[in-house]
Image (spheres, rainbow, N blue to C red):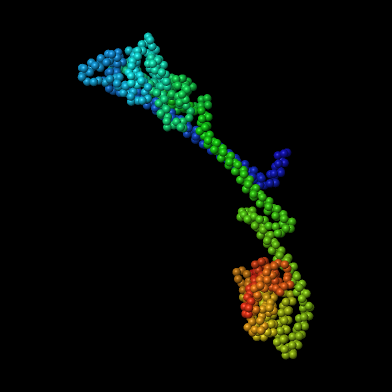
Length: 609
């Protein structure tokens, strides 16, 4: 029930909140899925990179141990290749050391040539390899161990089976090529047990191929670190070097040396397995009988991409925050603008036609607001054009009706007076009365369609009336393009301008007065220009007349009543671009120009004005 109330209150009738919720859910879900896929990709890549580092480290360590194993094999191989050296080595291992010395001296005196010294040969090999801790030659027949202590001192130790376990251990370890140094051998030589690995090679009689002993070379296990120097910064976990018996020959942690590591007994080479939260990789060298193992915990693997994971989570959180906030801010702004439009439409509905939406943006809502404002402007203009124009037209008609005192009676009276003047010989007076009566008749006679031709004809009658009165004192011209004569026009929009010239502008004492009326189309409108060479208008008065034309306070009783009535009627009927413009300069012959702008009538106005 609670959920249903919240839905109805906040979402059911609120399109924008529903849209924010849907968009935010889509964005959040997309960001989470994308972040998860990126995390999986980066984590797999990081784990694969780390495992590649582990494998390269394994290969480097294995190559190092194999190199040492091969170097020991090369020592014995070089012995077999040198016949003299092989003979002396065989003699040393099969006979006591004193006899070996006599044997070398005898051969020297017999052949008068030096022969190879086994002791010096192996001493040179120790000097060539700084990683060698000790080199030993074991004689199986003599049960004697020849060895180099402190790298330079050659010594020998008796390892008689009656007093030592060395012969037994040497026999048992015969199959171990790479192993940890035997504890009994170390004790017999007086050496301390330290991290070392032993490489064992059997020695045989070259002639009979019978095994006569072994060579043991002890290498410092710490030297294996040198093979890992290229990977020490990126390497993680632990590296173990195991013998064939799974004894730890080398351990990067320094804790497992000498111990047996049986957990990986069943593991094959080049195989990654999980073992108690660890990932193990083993690389076996079958010929030498050792293997190199990499152990890295899953937690350490996770640490390889933990920074990337934290970065992705942080970026995802920020993106989710923006995915929620930005649509909410944008849509909230959109909703506020929409609600403002709704609020203003309600004001208009309640009759406030002056309400306007303030929105300067150019997007869809801005265009709606602009269209709404334009609609209100056109509506107000239409109201002014239709209703106010009709009201003012009625006022004008009332004023005209009040001014008319039985127009038909007056017209008939004027006709009687004209006939009396003609019969009395006053032809000019008759002409004046005729012009006045025709002019008056044109004004009071109702006509469905009033054109420029009618208006200009009335102007002509008016000017003709005063031309007769002021004989030879002024002239007039009327010009109108043929295509404009039959276009509809508001009645009495030119005659008051001409009347102002006759009353205020004409210089009655001069004979060169003239007035010109010109009607022509220009840029989609119709211009009627009335120009004269009268007295002109003073600058201050001209400014007052222009201001009076622009004031919107109804009909005025000022001296500009005629011009103001024309200007108001045109403006109310057609809008602000239409009306009267005044231009004048004060002085004799300076003159005044009045420009009246009419709209070019549309199809509807062609039949009704």
